[in-house]
Amino acid sequence: MLYKSIHSMAIVQALSHPLRARILSVLQEREASPKELAEHFGAPLANVAYHIQVLRKLKLIRLVKKTPRRGAIEHHYTADHLVHISHEAWGRTPGVIKQRMIAATLEELGEYVASAAATGGFERENAHVSRTRAVLDEQAWDVLADKLQELLESIDVLEKESASRLKRSNHEGERSTGIVLMMFEASPSVPDADAARLPEAGPPHARQREAAR
Image (cartoon, rainbow, N blue to C red):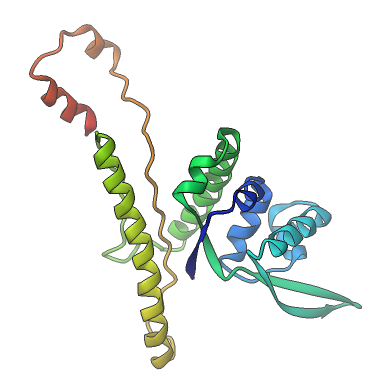
């Protein structure tokens, strides 16, 4: 699924609602109806239906089919793009909205990764999971941020190239692939009580490398 860069503050604020953000996350993975989503989240159907309409008006999801169900019509929706908020839009986003969005995203990511792990998602020999801590200055931070953006864009290119090959091979070797990218300011390391009482030894740069590990 391709990424769609979001620059509109109205859309960013709309995605700050936790349930709305989680609904969009599910619809980026599969088609679903408001009824199915309400059951999935344990939420009132009326609430889910309202958030669906908000997402549809923002053109983040679309109706894909209508299914007759016991005298009623069940509507199924999907998202065509993964949402990526641009650096500019994120910079203008108020802190309280950022906190809501990050909390909802982390909750959804936890479930997403845990589900993948439980079903063998990390069994391939070149599957990857790592955590890295580094001490960077502003210039290095900006370079790394640009590199991650380039990687995000390269995923789009690879998916387009894969789509044509998978079509020719009747989808043989198709892999549903989860990719999580994060870069954030980490909390500073806190030394244990004994280390705090000991005098520092060695040059500052050596101590800095140790703290970064």
